[in-house]
Length: 131
Image (spheres, rainbow, N blue to C red):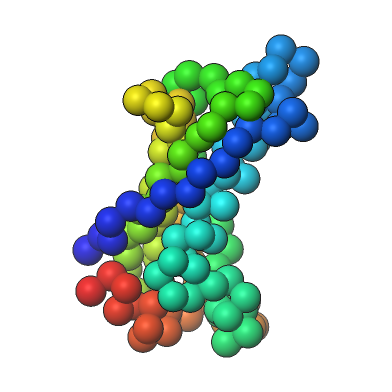
């Protein structure tokens, strides 16, 4: 089951662009992380709380399709949606949007790990977010 998408706004900073004023490709993955962090916080579980409870959520896979360039000073919307794939796999889908245009779309896949670095089940309160 999936949760409805959450949105976060960012404005492209000069440091995120190249000499032509176009956003450097790796910044999209940073924006994905911003969207994911805000999604978790909005649904009641921050990365800080998660790690304090002994659960890490590393990225196992990342994909980004670049459709149109973002440019310096653009006001962008990060749309983030989460899907529980299995008890030990989560996928977050993202769209980076400017106005009506989807500039980039992608996803990340995560596996919760315990403090020993071994896969673990998500805590019940997180699993309930997908119920």
